[in-house]
Image 1 (cartoon, helix red, strand yellow):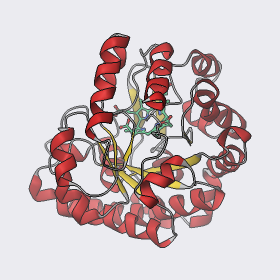
Image 2 (cartoon, protein in one colour):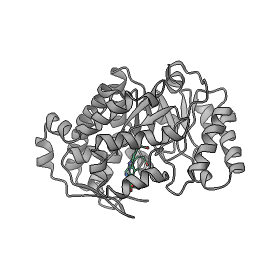
Image 3 (cartoon, rainbow, N blue to C red):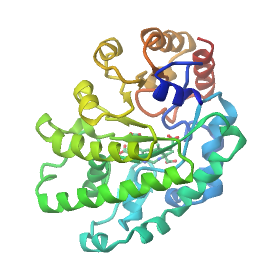
Length: 333
Ligand code: 1CP
């Protein structure tokens, strides 16, 4: 069994498994080289040969235990025929929502529109570099996708005041998302994904009284679906204050924590395998400090099933040598 599955399924940490969120991306010069010649980000995600190459880039450099497929959570709204563009120094920019158009969409249309993502997963999974490692498929949680679909760009720090004004529309979109995210999960698994991670990057924007409806219930539905396909699922509800309640309610196989979580406290509270935690900004400091901080997490979780990762994606300004140092340090621990 691969080291990450060993942690999640057998609850044993062997060989200090490690993968890094956004491990394929802008901090790597070889990615920036490809990106320079491919200004349309969605088209790049839908080029199965290039997205396979990008997915494998970090595995050629570092001894990571998983490949996470180079794609984006916004491929789902794109597959639902909402316009999605990525603008330089601005981030994602989405077009108007046309509910009647989305409501008419069939599974076949959706799969056809983003089929190259599944082709890339097949290519990655069968590559020698991924032998004895996991291919991780992923989706955005319904709440986080709803935020982008309604807000139409990154919410940065807060939601618009009138975000919840059209409840009928919101309920309809949540229903559609539940259906199509499941289709996306199933197709990734059928193509070779061995683990699914659910990113709820904007869970932290909600007040407590809205968590049941927008975070807990919709995510539980996806977790139960993924488990029914016999594939483990990791959840990352970034910024949520009560990780304990989340874990008990949503019941993922493993939980990924953000860097504001106190690792000592969470270890006491949570029984399931834990992933991540270290602040990505630590990689912008020096090797001595990096070693100290990474060791802190490894020490705390030495008797708890743990997958090393960061508390959010690796930052574009990270020096790849620091990443190399981190991976070696974790493996030698
Ligand atoms: O070159 C570029 O400008 C593209 C930058 C980029 C990359 C490399 C984007 C745009 N997406 C990605 C790939 C990506 N996105 C992966 C690939 C696999 C890997 O991890 O190596 C994954 C898992 C994602 C997931 C994703 N996309 C999330 C969830 C995780 C998180 O960071 O919180 C979110 C919120 C997105 C939306 C998105 N896509 C891209 C950007 C810059 C953003 C964030 C925008 C924002 O701040 O709202």
